[in-house]
Image 1 (spheres, rainbow, N blue to C red):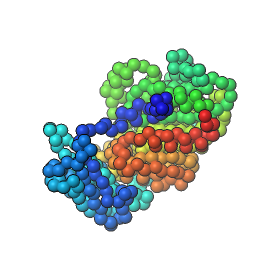
Image 2: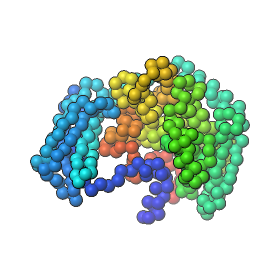
Image 3: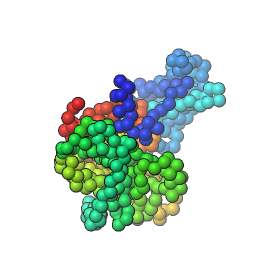
Image 4: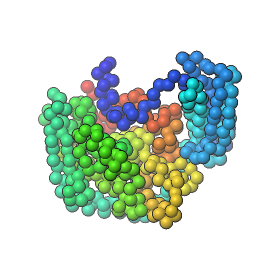
Length: 431
């Protein structure tokens, strides 16, 4: 049992673990009156609230509540005294598909505790606000063609301390975007001679080191986990902290005024280049390759699969960069919430034009790869209005798992399901 849990935690990755909610002494439980948290447009929703301490319902507690559409300003707020074990809050309804969120706060001994639930109103009918540029495919195919002119020039450094009896582990770096610019990652290759399927993991937001998917490689597959910033991925934490709060602080907002200057152009091309490298490997079976990512990585996974038809399957958990212009239409947009508080109209107009070439929605529109998706209704990092905007335009085979209460994290059970799904798609042999 201990070994199984250890392997799972390695696969999920540090970024997910940091997002996992912590247990609190007092729990504010907000329960929709529909078990699936789902309502029809025009249907009235109500939530029931109880407060637990030591698993016992508290009474006489003062509640403060706020009701708002997904990521929008508060439309209603109030206070209640919990005279019984449970009280009722009437949310009202929505006149268009979307989400209505109720946040409930309790103060006790100087601490504030929060509970939250989000009602979904016909979410499968949510349509995106962003537009699809007429030259979207041409833009990216031209960018890939130019990038292909640069030699991959792979460099491998064996990480002896990370190798196992079954797997060799390397720090890999390859050339990308311009001569001298490189992307780095952790490559794991089975030691036994043969030809194997491959899994590419693309990263969530941040600046950090990476461990690689060693245990997955031990099952009989090549794994490559990349960073996006063109820096080694095996340095001390202080190195990444200096960049996170220094030169790469808020990198997600860099250069959105022009489509060829935005930070993410090199990032997207780096994901395609990683697939190119895998196809040069003698150990790769030449066919079975998948891509996986969460949050920012979920967006990168969808983009990679959309523009590289060689990818056979993708896993995207709560993808970012979905329907970025949502805020300009009075509803939630995706991380990094580029247009939530716009100021200069001229800059915003240029950013709108650029955003269309990087919006996950537009990659989703041309996606032909089978996919496994997951998110929760309480996510305020990659809000469900934005993720459904992308999911609803996917015509490729797709499977969506919803854990309604989840914020920006996933329970281990969902990772097990995604892992097994990808193994099946890639034809990984069961142990």
